[in-house]
Length: 83
Image 1: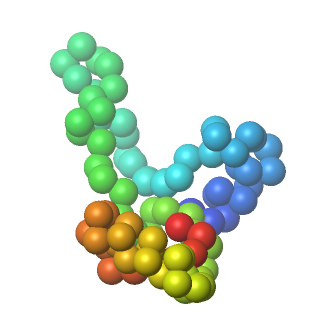
Image 2: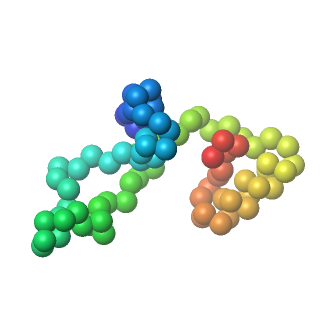
């Protein structure tokens, strides 16, 4: 819910390619000993961090087959037609 609201707010002001796909709240950015951003220290976003549209089931034989392939490749339970 919060990720969707943030995405909508930023999407109204920025081009789509500049809007993050996930939002994670951090108390502080992890830094290396040199004071630079420690990218490996950043947490992996959980499922609630992503702004997603409501699930829409695949329609038709081709979409169903493609969704099954992507679900298997990505190791996820289900793939919607807009994913």
